[in-house]
Structure formats: structure tokens, C-alpha cells
Length: 212
Image (cartoon, rainbow, N blue to C red; front, side, top):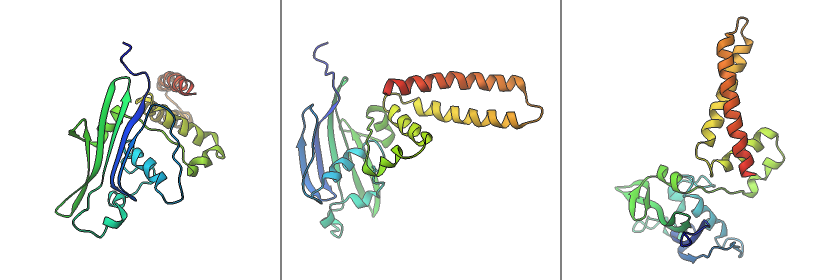
């Protein structure tokens, strides 16, 4: 169907009382986006807001009350912040939102998908976000293990089961090593584990190759 969009991109982004943005509304097309400005103008805060739709605390891992617009932190009458994002995918247009809700001094994170109340885990099913920050540049200077973990995190954005395979494969490798250390090892059990390792390894490598 020619009416179905082939790209995946953010169409609109709105921030309300978030960090140093009291009321920000961005309309974005399906081309690359460059955000620039003076230090402290809120460029990274925009990216952090987007990252909250993939990880519960965002890439800064801040507390939910820390996102509140700076001048409102000591204003007892306005203690809420919110983010709304509208994106286009091959499945059509989707609107998602998240923010801080304060009831009787109890703070909680709320999520809405297409105007319906939802939860954080639901976001993982419809949206995967990957990013590289300057702090993550160390991965290019570390060993192969850290680089593989980075690739696996990216691969999970195209296959939600990928990390489950990686964790299961690591567990089986540890079990295999423990069996090999035993004097009278169970060769039948060892063979079973090695068969599972081989099957998982093929699937893991294939997904890594798909990403690269």
C-alpha cells in the first residue's frame, strides 16, 4: 500500500515544564535533525525527554521530580511536567505521552498511548530508541565484551527477544564450564547444553550481522 509510510520518525514533540523548557513545541519532518544553540539553552534536555520513552529514567537516570521546570520546583501550585511525542511508523501514526503526577504528596510517573492510560512496559513494545552519548565513547577503548554488549543493546531495538537469547546463552556457558570442572561430568547433559549453546549462538550472531 503506497499510503503506508516507509520511514520511522518523530513528527511532533511537546515539552511542558520540563527542565528549562516551560512550553516547547516542535514540528519535525522525516529528514535528519540538527539541534544547535548556546550552552545551557536545553539541547540535551530535548534529547533526554525523548529518551524517557525508552528507559524509565532516561539516559541521565534522574529522579522524576528532577525533570520539573527549574523555576517551578519551589512552587507548590505547579508540580507537574509532561512530554508528548507523535511519531510515524510503517504502522501509522502514534501519540505517546508521559509526565509526573502528584497526589497527596505522592509522586508517580504516568504514561498514555493514543490518549489511553498505559504503563512504562507498554512503551517498549511500540518504540525502541538507541543513542550514543559522549560518555559512552569509552566503549571504543574497552575490550570486545563491552563492545558486544553495546551491539546487543542496539540489536534489541529490532528484535525484542535478542537480549533474552544473549542472557540465556551466557547462563548456559557458565553451566558448561561448571560441568567441565567436574571429575565425572555428565556427558549427556554436556552434549545437551552444547547443542543449546550452538543454536542460540547462531541466532545471536545472525541478529548482530543484521544490525551491522
